[in-house]
Image (cartoon, rainbow, N blue to C red; front, top):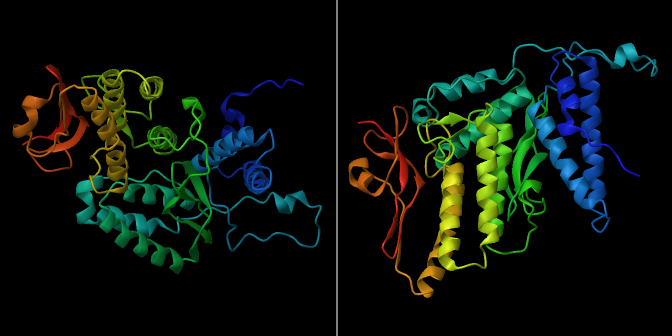
Length: 387
């Protein structure tokens, strides 16, 4: 039997986005139930021929629910009738939406002067507490981890004051290890957390299976990037092959499609050159590394934030490729470009100047490392803060 494919669940998304819709509320409850049932079934059906398709469906449901999540708890003034189970008028009573319970946490977050250099003059876009929780937590992934830990504890304390407590339910992103990025909430506010999982398949567009090879880490980073592009409207790209003259938001088309296509193509080139000539393989690695590091926030992330450390983890895989080139008899030099811009600009080309974040006169982000193979030079590329 053949089934006609429906593109991207667009009709589900349209209904879920309608504010104060009783039908959207019922649909959301049903999708949460379906997600939980499928997730539980997968634990005991690992050899089922439909397990791979089921995992992909779970990923689509998680993104859909995260993007359109709304406050699921009923207000204190909303009462469901228990006397007449057949009364749809009671079941479909809309959720009363008042002022955001977590609004004061967001206000304190953006008012913190210590954070302002990392997040700029940020304004929250969320209209529901579940979305606001995720937006605040994603913001903390961009700041130094020590500062993140302080704020995350403070946010949990403040959330508990309005009846919301941490819970383990999380959206899982594919990676090579399990790692909790931030918790969800239950109680008066129900929000999904975020985690990395070694049990979730990589983005299906990469067409790669986990094999415990070094390629897995790159596949994980690229999969995370692709997920974040869908989840976080604050992301930009500065990929030279797509647009050499500026930094563009990936929240808008056609920039989003162009960057995503370039990122996936560069990963597939690395995949295709794993066993090729080591110089060809290194060039492909350099191009992919540039694409990964060209996905940026404005202001740029701190190097010791979760996001910054993830990018550095991807860049360290260049060491293996460089060593293979050296074993093959080539002279090779790789140099990440950091520090004062005046000291590195001779190693780079087509750099872009910023007027926010970072330290004046210094490199804010190394988009591409400088490389030299024998006598062939591959200039680096940076974002730098104006003096």
